[in-house]
Image (cartoon, rainbow, N blue to C red; front, side, top):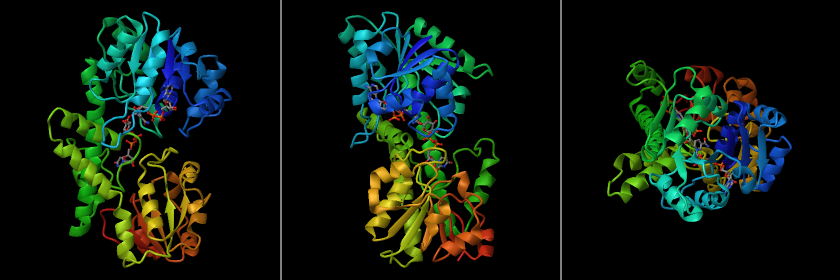
Length: 436
Ligand SMILES: NC(=O)c1ccc[n+]([C@@H]2O[C@H](COP(=O)([O-])OP(=O)(O)OC[C@H]3O[C@@H](n4cnc5c(N)ncnc54)[C@H](O)[C@@H]3O)[C@@H](O)[C@H]2O)c1
Ligand SMILES: O=c1ccn([C@@H]2O[C@H](COP(=O)(O)OP(=O)(O)O[C@H]3O[C@H](CO)[C@@H](O)[C@H](O)[C@H]3O)[C@@H](O)[C@H]2O)c(=O)[nH]1
């Protein structure tokens, strides 16, 4: 099938590339000229494992194209995907301005039989509003489907190629048939193709993210409780997870959820609820607990150093909001950095992939270390924010040599407290009794 993918970011580029990989002819469009020029040269502007190889392969086979020219991509497309950003407005509602701009741009070039497919996460009613706008702009009825995307950064290719389910909100059999055909190669292991109204599809995306965020805020609150009551959240997690009604997924405590999805989607769903007169008590609590959790390492640092942080040198491992990505949107590490700088600390950071993005934000305010050990040189403590594989089996003796004080604040529970005791570290983690 001929596909136009509007927006070549984390979702558009991954989706477009994977769809090309199953034999479709895909043109990715972006307003960011630099991004498109780099992609045309085979350079992938984001870090997502496995993506670069797939982009190069499909571009070489002539199935994957990049352009800033919307007309060129849309003119021949049977499916026009919208995968532009839908960030948060100040009040928590979704900012749909990129989506409206994209709709204006595609309208004059749409084939009469094209289906516009909304892949961006967008509030209930967006599909209808796009239909209304396209009717005005084209003077005819346009077929608009909603097809929310559930991929996770860091595992995006695998998630796209092996989805748990495909959700499509459609108004016509034609749209359903086209999407069913498109996704057939990904559903060969009996995973369901679920059709529903666009409104239900729009809601499904938000409800999924809200529930996953709820699990994280819940376990974080329980972890904080474990600390006070001298329990161990890891034992408790195992104790509940074996109950098949509960399970283990998305119940890892930490420094709060970040990224471009959970924080904004919880807030946008709460905004939708308020607009129809419902008080979203649960969603507000999930957001509040998460905002609080982003300060958890700072609170432990303050306690350790009796509130005297000024003049300390603090090392941070892990800046991306999760491992295997360079994405720092709403990353808990940024909250910690801001607080440490405000308190007068010197901050030395390392991340395997996100250093460039952090440097673009903080410039010379931080020291950027290209290896985990270099970040520790002369530091009074180490804070771990992201559970990169690189940090799981470090050389503890060498760490002790590099650190000025052997103190670790582990926001991801990477190490066993007993091991840390043996190495002689002061070790603080999440929801477990500290090693002093
Ligand atoms: N990142 C994820 O893991 C993820 C997963 C599922 C769903 N989503 C949703 O998908 C959407 C996109 O997210 P993302 O993370 O890929 O965003 P992103 O910021 O990485 O990418 C969006 C891209 O769209 C481009 N763009 C904006 N307006 C455009 C226009 N008029 N024409 C062409 N390009 C335009 C931007 O330049 C940018 O490159 C959001 O609604 C998000 O909530 C994201
Ligand atoms: O047990 C857990 C699991 C995750 N997290 C944190 O939660 C955030 C989000 O992680 P993850 O869900 O793995 O990454 P995303 O790429 O944000 O993916 C989420 O958001 C996407 C965008 O909507 C959806 O498509 C995905 O299904 C959904 O998992 C990160 O900060 C993680 O550190 C935890 O703290 N504990």
